[in-house]
Image 1 (cartoon, helix red, strand yellow):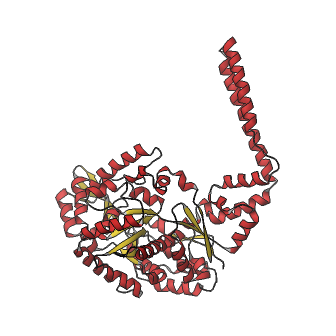
Image 2: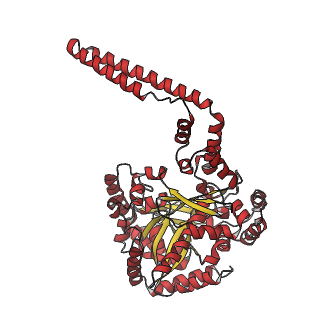
Image 3: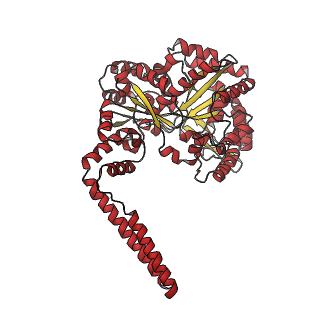
Length: 535
C-alpha cells in the first residue's frame, strides 16, 4: 500500500463555519476552548487533572474492567485501562453509533485517528499519558440508521422489530440470514477467512449488539491499545446525576444552547443549528423502549403513560440514574463528565453541534475539550487508479461536483469552446446604448427594452446549453470513464467513506490495512488522504 495527500478544497469548505474552523479563524474561537495544537493539549491536560477527581477514576476503571470481563484484550489495552487510575492519564476520544460490522469506512478512520493522535502526543508530551477511546452511542434508538451495510456494491439490511429499544440492548438473534448474506458478499481474498472468524467470535446469539460491537472493534484495534466504552452503565450515570437534575430544575441545556445558537447565527450568516434543544434533553428507558420526556403544565410526561411531578422525577434520577439516557446534544456533557478527556475527534456534523455547547459546559463548570475535525480518506484499488491515469484528469478534480468535473474534462479536450460570455457582454452594451437613447426620447420604452434584453439573453443561455450538450455527445466514452471513476469515489453521490464498508479491503490486506490507516491517517485538516490499496 502507498498513499498521498491532496488539498481538501471540496464541498466541506463551502460551509462557512467549518471552513473558518479549519483555517483557525479567530471568529470561531469564542465558541470553542482553543484550536488543536500540542501546546493547547498540554495546557488543557494540566487543567483537567486538577478538576477530575480520583474517585471518578476508580469508578471509571472498575466499570471498564467489568465491561471487558468476557472479552480477550491485548496487553496494551489492558495497560491503558489500568493507567486511567493514574492522575496523569488522559483520553483522546471519538464516538460513533453501533454500526453493524463497523458500518461505513469513516468509523475505521475515526478510530484510527484517535489511536494515531494518542501516539503522537505521547511521543512529544512527556508529562502526560494519552490513551485512545471510542465512546459507543449504545443508547440511540434509531435502529434503521445503523441496520444497513453496503458491501460489494450491495446494500443489505438486518430486518427485525426492535420495539424502540436502545440499539445496544438489542440481542443478536435471528441474525443468521443477514450474517450469511454479508459473508457471501466478501470477496475471496487472502484474509476473508480471518475476517469471518472475527465476525463469528463477535456476533454470538444471545449477546447484546453493544457487546458484539465491542468484541468486533476490539478484534480490529486491540493491539493498538484502544479502549471502547459503553456508557449505558449505572455506575457511570451516577456521576451524571447532578447535571440531569439541573436539566429538570433549570432547563439548562435548552437555555444555554439556544443562547449560543442565537450568537452563532449573528456571526455566521449561513449557520443553521445542527441540533435544536428540547425542553428536556434526555430520555427515559422503559419496558416499551427509549421514550422522550415532555414538559407540560409543570409535569413530566413519558409516552403519555407515566406522568411525574418535579420532585418525583428528581427522586427517580437520584435513586435510579440508569433509567435515563442523554440525547445527542446532552451526550457530550455526559461524556466529558465521565472521562478525563482533553480532545474529541468528530466529523463536520458532530463539530457543528459541539460548537453549540461551550456556554452549556461553562455554566456546568466543566472544561470544554479541544475539538478536532476527523480526517477524510479514500481507498482506491489498482483498477480505479489505472482509470484515473487513462482519464487524463488529475485525481484532485474527482473530489468536487460531477458536473464541474465533466465540464472541466470537456473544456480540456474540446476544440470547440462553447462559451458565449463575450456575446452576452456585447448584448448588454448594445442594450445600455438603447436605454440611453430611450431616456432622451421616450422613457416608457425602458420596460420593453429590459424585457427584450432578458428574452435575448435567455435565448443565448438556451443555445449555449444545447451546444454544450451536443458537444458532450461527441465525447461520450471519455465522459463515461470520468463518471465511473467518480461513482467509485462517491457511490450514490455519497462520499465513499460514508457509504462503503471496510470488509473487502480487509479481506485483501488483513490487519495490515488497519495498521496502515493508523500510521497514515493523521494529516492536516485541509488535506485528504488517498490510499492506493495495491503494493
